[in-house]
Image (cartoon, rainbow, N blue to C red; front, side, top):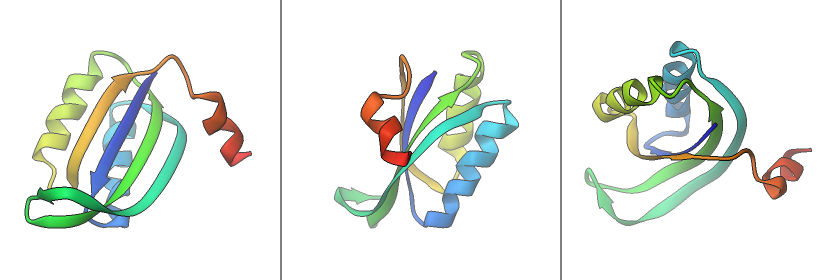
Length: 96
C-alpha cells in the first residue's frame, strides 16, 4: 500500500490522477481532499493548488511508471509517494 499526496491546479484534474492509477491496475482505498490551499512558494508560476491524499494499492513495479506519467502531466503540480502500512485509524473514522 502507498500513500500518495498530490497537488493539482484544478480540482477536476484529480480525475487525471485517478485515470493514471486505475490504468496501471491500481486501486484507490481511501481519499482525503484537503481543498484549495496557498502554496508556500510559487510552483510553475502558480500560488494556489488543490491538495489530495490517497491511499492506494499498486504493484511496486508500477510505481516507476506512475511517476513518469505524473512528471509529464501538466495537471499534476507536485506529488509525493510513500510506502504505507495501511490507512491510519483516524483517517478511516473520518469518512464513516
